[in-house]
Image (cartoon, rainbow, N blue to C red; front, side):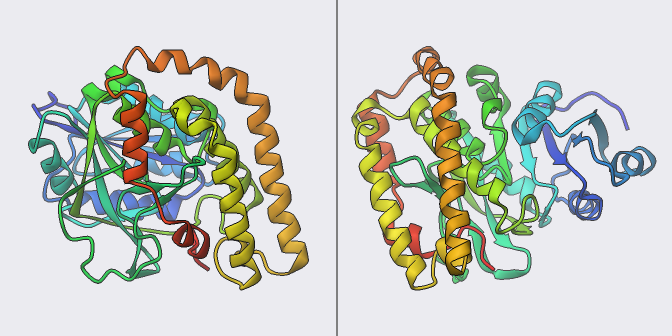
Length: 350
């Protein structure tokens, strides 16, 4: 289905890699939206499960465009491909392992009518396997660069039912003003995956854009479907990218404190692990703890090798800066996650 892009049109980008069944459920959830997308762009990262062939044969009641990569280029590069081709005034991201409730797009779109400096909108993301449990309602951050979903692991008991400003949206289910992305750029492809939405979100905040959480924009997300709950690769990327995020975007007043915040998080994590809670509790026994420690070490070593390139990007941030370093520090402190919450709750429950 082709046609002229309407004013206020919404482009939805879905990145896929070998998840045909999940992808179909994801796209079917877009069929029933109360505000239909103007186009859906699926970026396939070299799937070998027949996903591209299925997409080429199926029809939907919206314009479906397929970008087919020969290899897995990662979440960041694939989304940037979709953003570059998106024709809508607004760009929504939806993970292929997420399913949107009917009012999702309409609710997210309403966020941008509140003020012209709203550049991002965050969804209420619930756990697919148990929708009583919150996955994320926007993001919080610990001041060593580790970020975590707001409300992650809590029972949804109406505590997040207000439209309110949050730090940034989770890239699993988010909407961005296209003009903002054109101004500040897309995802940092050096990150590949994990903390990518945090880097983009904080960069947008530094450029003066804000984010609203829209409680009626609901999606259900399969937790850990991408790399798995105990995938070492996931841990390496998370640790590596939290260092790169801080090195690129944190004000100097927080950077020199970073080792102290990191040490505090490690000690809290060790204590939680000894009691079988938190992320460390997901890796039982001595062998599990060694795997976890080695993953963190590999992440830090990889970050060290990438630091010169990342550090050189700091000068580029000044070109888009609207917030002073002091204002950035205040923003992060206002949205800081309590250390106990960070250490004792898991990002991906069993």
